[in-house]
Length: 64
Image 1: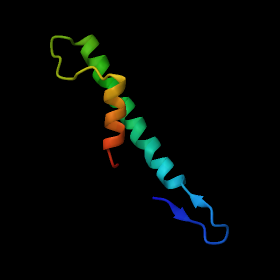
Image 2 (image 1 turned 30 degrees about the horizontal axis):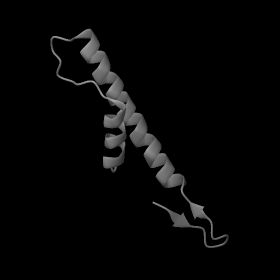
Image 3 (image 1 turned 45 degrees about the vertical axis):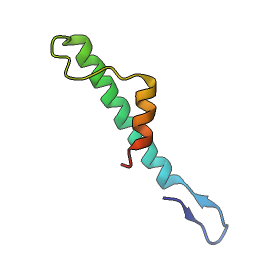
Image 4 (image 1 turned 90 degrees about the vertical axis):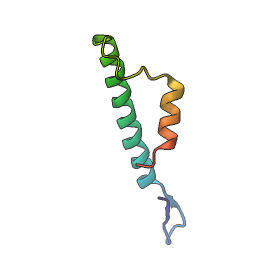
């Protein structure tokens, strides 16, 4: 969410920036978990390896 500071007219993007950081962090942790599971438990292979393009796609398709 971007709000406008009425006194200065500047955009406050802190809320959206924090949301993106939270989403990015969650996706990175999921990616790490999936890669570690696939590495240490290849016979289960329930999780897949995440490529960089998968990470970017996941980041931009999530809302929260």
